[in-house]
Image (cartoon, rainbow, N blue to C red; front, top):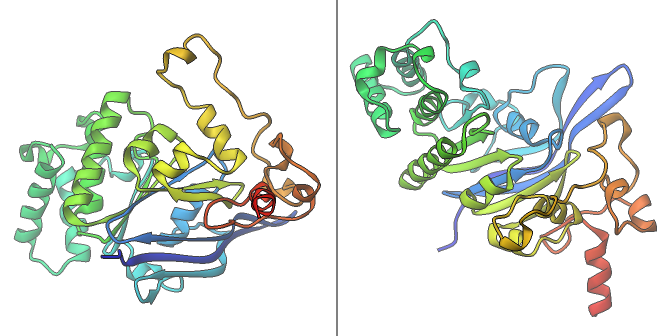
Length: 321
């Protein structure tokens, strides 16, 4: 049975009006998320990953705005009134749980308040849902009256996951949910998120810069660069056969436990992500790409054959033909 499309972004653009002109943090981005799917969005800092998540949920701060494109959730266009679905159908897990939790209120109060705000239940039912939610993420329900500072970083992230799932949303946007956590706790949090979403059939957009996190969690990968989509495809497909030179660089710079790589320096992509007010013409990656040719410097590529936005693919296809 073919999965149904839950979320669709159609050529969206997030721009900021400044003294120096209009800057595009997300530029002509199109992608879909299927029901029950985990889509990983990966790229360096400044690629537009978090801004994409903020655009979906309608949390772009002025002077930024969604300046073009459409966002569809099922059969409903949501970019015009995202607050209708925010918190109920779409929820978000932010990078730092300390900024997501009110330090002056118990975790139980915050869970109950969230449930009452978005679901037609009594306070008694909300309190029971809060207890069940904590137990589901591996926290002793007896700690429902504890304050956020009484929990470790990993436990606070579990509380945030419980908050995000408390209203039984259809889509969860997880923005760097394992930042600042050690490796063992990171694995626990990711396994918990995967398990809960699989059991509920919830879709997830996992935003990260860590290819290792993407590899063990997502069903598909969208690689972003300078606000644009560089490559998209199945996780195994992209990781084993990356098409875009940027994706290839990300893979080459990922640490490996392979004995052959022991003692060798990690690959480093030369240069840095361009600033929004200094994007080069043509392909935004061309100043850092060892394969760049004349066309790359002049024309902007789009995703070819459903995989990567790179003129090299078109050249190879023409040669094969």
